[in-house]
Amino acid sequence: MREERVHRLLEPVEVAGDGQLGRHGWSLTPGPPRRRPSFGYRGQVADIPFGIDFGGTGIKGAPVDLTAGEFAAERERIKTPSPATPEAVAEVFVDLLGRFPDSTGPVGVTVPGVVRHGVVHSAANIDESWVGTDADRLFTDATGRDVHVVNDADAAGLAEVRYGAAKGRGGLVIVTTLGTGIGSALVYDGVLVPNSELGHLEIDGHDAESRAANSAREREGLSMKHWAKRLTTYYRTLEMLFSPELFVVGGGISKQSEEFLPLVEIDTEIVPATLLNKAGVVGAALCVVEELDE
Image (cartoon, rainbow, N blue to C red; front, side, top):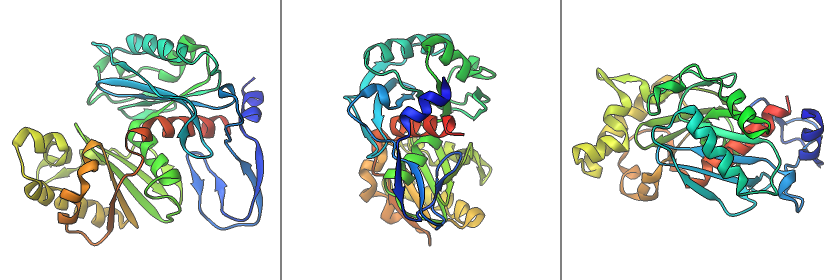
């Protein structure tokens, strides 16, 4: 059944030497002409994957046309339950998917925590009952669909590399999200290195996100100039450790990037994310197709 569904999803097209699809992303290594999946929206929502972005205040979802990295139907949003236990969230997912009766494809889900083989291993900003939960199995059983769970920052980062600010960029790209915490995604030549959790680096004796996340700026009433100094320290540390080709900065505050990014003094190019609140949903859908393609 899984193979049949994948073949329906992946309609091959000819391409010329621009790489191949790996476990979590497109490799940008040049090669001979090959066939790759088009991820096309062929007129039926049932034919394409569905992305769900599980956040602290809202759960958003939509079917996604992976040819363009766009929603194939208008996105729906449901308030995150309180407490947001795995079982309560699973009920919301069933409700959300029920709003798209024509959608029967596989489902990608983002979770704000470390995810390995479908099991959640951390819960820094979600209910502690998530730790040890086999989320892949829980959501598959609840929805009756093929479900793959991925770290939220990883999904957003992969989407930015595939469709957004880092599209077409080779080498190491580091995508960060500045919000309640600092999420991170490492993507090397289009392939995701999952669960980097670079917001938890210790810098000057502090957890980095406790000093440099947007929530720290708001909590302490920092000016953009003062906050940019902290961001400079953070990104210089990442620069020293990884020597990336590009930093992409996401999160809601990235809409105001012109007020602080020019003040971040580093050598590496640093740009704002472009997918904004679409990144999680689009990235989740992309990840589930790649998981099924293995």
